[in-house]
Image (cartoon, rainbow, N blue to C red):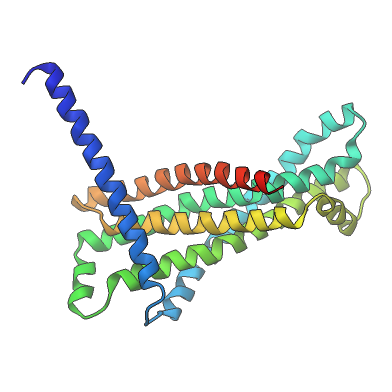
Amino acid sequence: MNRHSAKKYIFSGRLDRYFLGVHSAWKFTGLFFKEVVKRPFHLREVIHQCFEVGLKSLPLITLTGFIVGIVFTKQSRPPLEDFGASSWLPSLIGIAIIKALGPLVTALICAGKVGSGIGAELGSMKVTEQIDAMEVSAINPFKYLVVTRVLATTITIPILALYCSFVGLYGSYLNVHAEETSSLISFYQSAFNTISFLDIITSVTKTIVYGFTIGIVGTYKGYYATQGTRGVGKAANQAVVLAMFLIFIEEVIIVQIANWMR
């Protein structure tokens, strides 16, 4: 085999593996939608996973949202003052945080913290054959491990994004209040004056899609982890990278669709 043929063979093998991976991911996602409507629903495990995703991410979400609000306000004030439009600052902050920064920051934080945790947890269970043991004991491991975690991220991340947005607006208010006297109520009213119902729906839709993506990617990478402990770390890393990549693509697509609807 000459050098050109060897390169062609390697490229062909990688292409085959890529399409096999895409097909496997689609089958995994389709199986989720098939199992999610079947009994038993494992509500207790869903609530437990919501606690794991939500409350344990709350301190980091709070700190990040608060800092984003303060920093973005500090950076936005000088250009607006140059044009004599500093009164538009609350509206600008409201548009930036509610429509973009709040959902995106929350999704990226949860992709790093929650996605990697799910990938590592399920990967560890896979390589230690705990998932196989669940099948022997007549428990559907996909239903119990995958469906519950995907539902938890899909439910919890929109709530975290809404919380992050309000915390970010409060951080912005503190910065505005330090420069000029204004009430919290008037600040929030000004921030929401330029926000339409379509903007709220778009933000909620984005966070639901982000939550589903983080859950399905993390569970998929962990559920099919191989190569022992090395595979666990690889699954966690791939879950974070792929989830973030898909989140950015979804952000562009959803924003484009929202613009067409206007």
